[in-house]
Length: 154
Length: 358
Image (tube, rainbow over all chains, first blue to last red; front, side, top):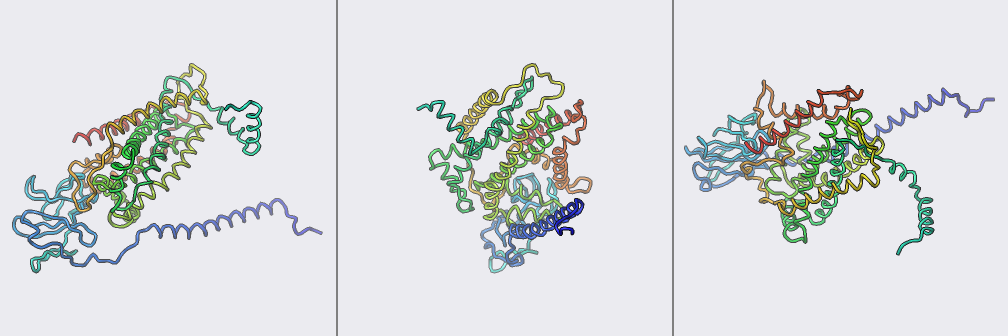
């Protein structure tokens, strides 16, 4: 009578192959959810979207003609300019190249924005005209109300 | 008090029965170092390891006082420098060693490249060595933000924006590095955690592997170079010579750390524009200068994306050098790769000089 535990070499090999594949599948099943948990854990949390809110940044007296200041508007640094002609303009202060804060430059040529990191330059309307910046500064909307300056995303 | 030989033997036997290390010791004691006209370059591997050990020790000491939050980071470094006994020295050594370690690592890498030490059977040594270079650059990048001064802030701001140009996963990669949309408390925590836990653990494993490979295959003798003398036993002959190199390295380090103590700039102001003439550390200057020289658009392609893409491709090719240089693996001359190495060294030197002078 054949013992139920007797198996030929090929059967043992087939069983080992099957168990090997089973172990592979088991590893994927275990690793995949762990990887998902770790990835979700390290991905930063998103707070409530406040980017459309209108924020009061300063009073008009704070910004003399031909000067600019950087304010934080919903986590975004925004440069607000009071131009020589009396207009108010606002742009994201992040250089569109690698994110450095741009400055209002009145020393070299007509007033413009420049970035000290890699030399990008933007005209008074935020348009890039020199250096590695690939696109204009992101514009923001400026409103004046009761001697205050309000800024919001366009 | 000196132990008599009989007792010493008994202790050694007792220990060997419980911790059988004689096989391991005999394996390590067989290590030899070839002697030829280019043997001098072998010292830079050991010197890099020596600098790494200094980084571990000084890093642990700094971690005792450092506080990783935007409100306290700068002040805690200031306290280390101004109040903690020898704190200024420990910090200065840590910062200077980072630079010397990279310098030594570059020399080690290029000497290995020019001596074609990557050829069969040392391909994995080359790959592990290059991974260590990337890890060390990672150490420098993540450690740079920790003092939370102006230059640290802007260097990290720029560095973390670089992956943004990568298609599909770029934005996610940037937010993963920053821990959000801006450089802040989350960024500092992440950089600190990566700097003191993740990178050291990976580095220890790869350093161990690199040294094991070195033990198994020994140091490579350049093709066509004659060994006029028998190889030098590593224990203790070469180790004594290594110690001399380490002493020279340590002397240079202490001279730099004390005569030119590493400074601490103004506290970072996230709303201020970057200071004029801001530049990264010298080892990131080739990338900085290349980005600076590349126009915003090249043949309709985003210039920055192109530079980052090319650097990525070049890094992968550099990693695969042992498999690309087929001639060397067959112990045949490969002038093309020698020229390639020399061109790369010239490019790195010229871009560093240009970045400092223009």
